[in-house]
Length: 268
Ligand code: SF4
Image (cartoon, rainbow, N blue to C red; front, side, top):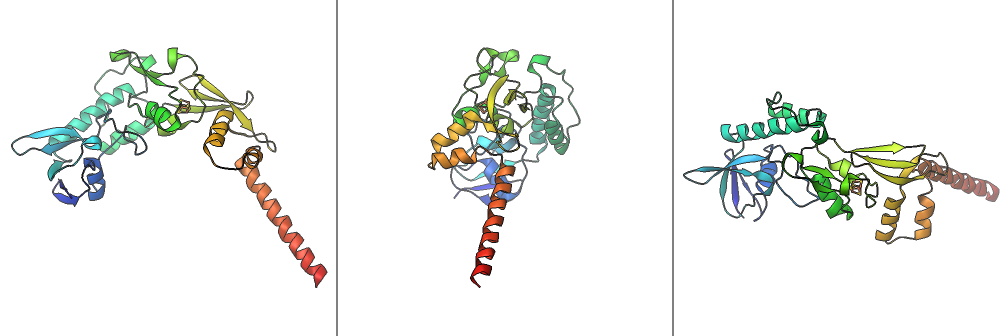
């Protein structure tokens, strides 16, 4: 197994593990934004830059996608690596100046703000990490969003920037967005869920008992098609929200206990 020496600390990792994996094993923190263990690694945001010692020179690499194939020496806290990461953070802050998640990470890294002008309103608050695009395609299988435009006009959008019919309103893109730009909005009156800023809307199932919205109809249908379960039982289950399901289960349990006690009294 190859050995990675990170800031003087030696760890052994499997061949082809990444420098980020090695750092985690060594207990060394490296900031990440576009990295997610569920999807393929792109190294798009560059916030995980570290220095790789190549003997007579040192190279800046991204820790999340650099495979370890031999013994290597890496510096996470060197001046050059730290400066590179802070520089990237300043650029990202210019793109997403209002993101609380990004500001918290910047503070953790010791970055106070950005010297760069913030981007225009239409591109605001997206750092173009692409995690939402990957999750929608690789995990959900919908590919309802993708990169659009070029250069400074590059954004993540639905086709023709219109509400996408492929969006099932699952909210997975919002769940992984590292800067909190994608939001799931529930419109109770219309019984719809909206994925902002993509303008996509999906119809929601509503609890038969309390009227609370549960999941989008398409998400329920996808779950049905993917799971090996009794369809009728699943349909019954999906008629109620988790809270009502729990209270119904509790009521059933209570009445079962009551019936058992009643029968015991009658018998004895
Ligand atoms: S909510 Fe829509 S855009 Fe987001 S991951 Fe699900 S299908 Fe894709």
